[in-house]
Length: 167
Image (cartoon, rainbow, N blue to C red; front, top):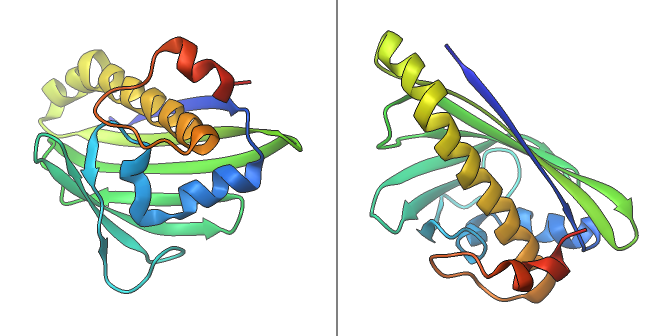
């Protein structure tokens, strides 16, 4: 059974500026509190076919390949080579202009956990909630980094520090 998650955040920054941060495909560790580094695999820096190897602080890792790409608008990645017990996982990011100084970022994610019925239950009761929180933190980190230029470490800034980055 596949699970679908949608995470939306309004950011107090122009859509083009947020897009530029997302489009720096090897730079996800700048705004993700979970990723230690994300070197590219191959010569493609962004766009269709670009692949990055995300290495998390706990030394687990995965690959993310861009399989759909609409410049300055959206991209979709397929995750693979993960250490998590997943049959499949993919995510899409969409940046939509709200005004000259703000935008909305939507992250859609689909995944299926291995292990049959047990995996379905784990996906619904545990893993889905965990992934939803990770996605929320990722978008908050994106907002904070885009507005402040400050790279995140292993945790998000306080609510007070995040507030100026959010609409």
